[in-house]
Image 1 (cartoon, rainbow, N blue to C red):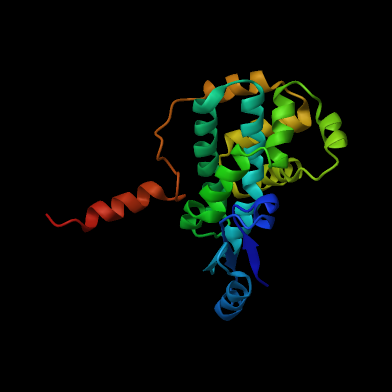
Image 2: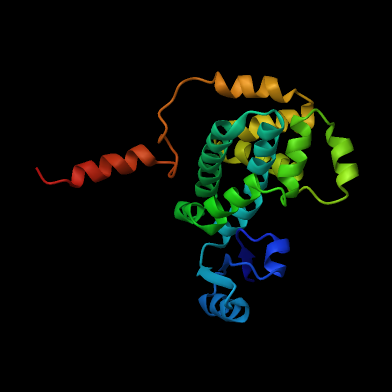
Length: 223
């Protein structure tokens, strides 16, 4: 099995605009075969052994794209969206690490790259659905009128269950779950997120045992 993922809106790929993706497989030979099959002057392909990370990055970014659309629909501007994408990346990395992914995968095309394109582009179904939610439309109406799959809706529910199973903190996912499945208003959700307890930014951003790793690093320093 080989997974292909990354920031690649079909509309732009079809026009042969420069696009870069990742193919992941536990079998390095199969990954390279797939790389050679797809790579050309407008479609660059990298390989990875981190199947879990590439799969999770491609799925979980749709949750954050919904949130980015909601933020834009509420008229909150660029500061809010930048914060949402960045803290969304922290949530994706925490869950991915807990599930066995390489946290560095989420700094690549299937993490940061896919987050940027899906959370900022009007090609994105998830951004468009979130934007309409932020404007006050109901989820049922949005899904009916769009007539396309909005992956982030079901993914939010799945991620909510996974965070419970792996005991991972994912406040943005929790609040989006409240909007989608408990009909809590987006403005109230934003207030709840902004009024959470103050924290250190790097706390458990990349690694579940971040502080332990830092202690080990300091212990190795020469006197």
